[in-house]
Every structure is written in C-alpha cells, then in structure tokens.
Picture (tube, rainbow, N blue to C red):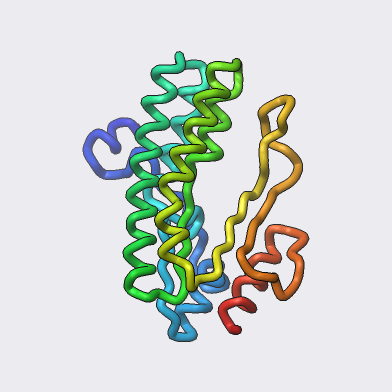
Amino acid sequence: MRYLLIKLGLVKPYPPSILPKHLLERTFIVELKRKGLKVSAIEIPGFNEERNEKYRTLHEKYVTKNLREKLSFLNEIIDDCRERIQQALNFIVKGYDLVFVYLPLPDIAHHLLYRNLREIVELRKIYGSLWKMISPLISHAENYTILLVSDHGFGIKNQYHSKWGFWSLNIRPPFMPSKITDFKKLILEIVAT
C-alpha cells in the first residue's frame, strides 16, 4: 500500500521525523526566534529536516554494495552538504545571529567505509572533501562563535560507534558540557553574551 501511495505522490518516500509541536517549542532554535534573533536552521534532525531520512534509510542498503556504488551514494550526500553549507554561508553574509546546519556526511561515510584499507583511504578523502567544504564557512564566520558537535565518534579499532561524543568551540565556554543535552543551555548562554 505504501509503495502505491508513494507512486501516486500522496506520501513522501522518506518522510522526515519531526518532533511534536510542543517539543519543537522547547528547542533553543524556537526560543531564540521568540527573542527576536535571526536564526537559520538547515536540515536539522527532528526540527525541519527534509532529506536526512532518505540518507538514514538508504545507507543500510549500501553497506553491502561495492566501493564504486558506496562512493556514488556518498557523492550524492557530498553534493547535498555543499548545498547546505552554501545556504549557511548566505545566512552568515546576511548577518544572522545564529546559523545551525546539520551535515550527515561523516556519520554515513563511517558506516559505509570501514571494511578494508581501500575504504579507509576513501574515508580519509571524504574527510578532506568535508574540510574543503566547510573552510569557507569557517573563514566567513570569523565574528561568530563556532560550535561543532558530534553525538558519537568512531572507534579506531572497530571503526564503529564509540561511546563518546565530542565537541569543539572557538571560544572559552561559560561551562563545560558533560552530556548532549547541556548544549541547549550552552548555546543560550553564548548567544546571551
């Protein structure tokens, strides 16, 4: 039935997973907008994503594919990330107070490229591509506080989810976040200063 509804264009093939309205209202994005700040949120999971679910769903299909097919799928994601970064850059040029962008590339690339040395080399190339993509964004955001957050890393030995996330901030934080939920308070405090 779902396949028929998709074919008829009545439902999206990969519907986004958006939080209920009462929870959206509690996000730092909405709180800052209510305070009158200019806030951009680009493809944020649970908030306003349109394309992430496609990548989350399809990456499982590509795990067993050959390297060429994996790289083709990852190149589609790279193109999408370039578009997101360009959108973020446009918001920075317009002087937005907060620009929030989600990039699915690192996570999905790690899920697909881990089996052998050739895949690890390709993973390294993808990280190089990602750095080239975000470098202009970082250089244009010199007057911005830049916070990078990952909900988990990947283990060196098994190339799979580690138990630890990581974050990086270009200023001294008002406090040290110890769990992922601390970042809302951190962002609100940084924006208030």
